Structures are given as structure tokens and as C-alpha cells.
Length: 350
Image 1 (cartoon, rainbow, N blue to C red):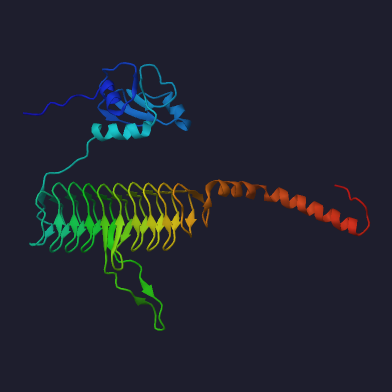
Image 2: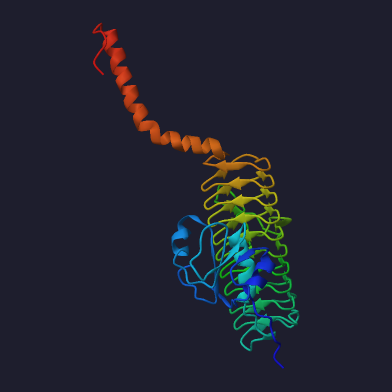
């Protein structure tokens, strides 16, 4: 018998996320969509600003929003953080596809590997002594190295790699091409050319971590590289050998953390930001785009620029740069006046 599921009504959505429902509470919502593309049974959201114009024309059945007027017939679900509330509801309205456990006949699983309860896709490889937890899905052409450990309910996308002896917790997502446990960049200059330093440590991802497409978390030279619980790495992020990143951090595309650095909890690094070797970054620090830290960063600091400095100072510097042409013209006129006075010509015309 098919299990009967309770429909998602506007009242149920409001209760689930703690929103206030303005309009019919019994409207059934069974999908999601953008403000411009949503239909009468879809949920959308609006964060204000440039989204207010498409909000005025939306045909969505309900919209999560903070402020703003919705068209007639649209249910407004008022919430202080509509994007967060939408994420919570969308996860229920559009559940992820999750296949039944089993090993595809074209996959390779070493006889000493443990994969019971997992799904192993075509051309995926699980090497000797590796363990893959129940409910985990290794998609086509994923790779798990010798004695590597992957927890439960993970999603390992095509061409993602977990190298030998590395450890991945529960509910971890590795997007396509992500590499966990590749060798760190350890090389010593020598008269006959660089000498490679063996990378003998491991990389550890705690529970609920996500690593974006083509992002890399290198193994440590001796001990471990560690990514804390709930941290999310965007596409093309580089985490070097021996780095420790705390819990619930967010690193956007092209961010880089050099070897031996330490990031606290809830650190945010915007796109193309960097932390150089051995720098400690405190909890709740925020790096604006292009910021590069060359010294330790105290907790709660907001940084901008390269080398990084306090965010407000950086903003003032950027604003001052736009005034430089005017200041240069003023300085030129003052120099001409001084030269005229020194020649005894009196006050020159302005």
C-alpha cells in the first residue's frame, strides 16, 4: 500500500519555518520556482531590492518574503530570513533522488572492501580495505582509495576522489571532480632541482561537509588536514596540506588556504580570498572579495584588500582612490602658484 503523505499547505509551510501566513492557509503547494517562473501551486521567495519588480508580477501560489506587497491572489509568508526559510521548505517539497543499495555490475569493489547498504554506480572503484557507509551513493566513476573511510548517507558525485586512508564523515557531499587527499604541494629547492617531500598524512572531512566541483583538500605532510563539521567549500577552492578549518565555515570560489593555517568556526571567505602559510584566523572572521591575510586575524574581524586590513579602512582607501585625479589637479595648480611666487611674479591667476 502506498503511504499517504500529508500535503504541504501554506499553513503547514508557515508552521514549519516560523513564518506568518497572510492569505488562504489551505492552499496546497507542491513545487518551487523563481518569481518569474513559478505557477499557482509553486513556492517562491523574495529578498527585496531588484527582486521587488518580478515580485509585483509573480504568479506563484505563495512567496516567502520579509517586506513588500504581493499581487492579488498570492499568499505572503512573512519571514525575517526568506532565503533560509525557502531552503528549508524546498528540501521537503523537492526531495533528492536516492537509489536503492547495490553494486553495479560494471563497478569494481575489492573483495576486502566493505560497502554493505551503499549504492556503487557504474565504473566506480572501491579499493582494498575501504569502508563505505550505509546509504552512501558513489556515482559513476567515483574513486575510493585503499583503507579510506566514507560515512553514511554521503553523495559522491562522478569523478570525485577520496584517496588512500582519508576519512569522510556522514552526510558529506563531494561534487563532480572534488579531490580529497591528493598530495600537498611539498617541494624543497635543491641544486639539481626541486626535491619532493613525501606527503604521509591524511585528510579528514567531518560530518555534513560539502566540497564543490574541482575543489581540492590536500592530505597533510605528516598528520592531518581537517575540515570541520558543516563547513562548505565552493567550486575551485584550494585547501593545502596541514590546514585545519573549523565548523560551519563558508569558502567561496577560488578561495585558497595555504599550508599549516588554522581557521576558526564560522569563518567566511568570499571569492578569490586567501590565507598564507601558518596564519591563524579567529572565529567569525569575514574576508571581503580579494582579501589576503598575511598575519593572524583576531576573532570577528572583517577584512578587505590585499594585504588584508580592516574592512572599513579598506573601503575608505577604495573611495579615496576615486578622488586621486582631482587631488592631482589641485596639487598641480598649487605647485604652479608656488613656482610663480618664487619667481616674484605675485599671485598667478587660478
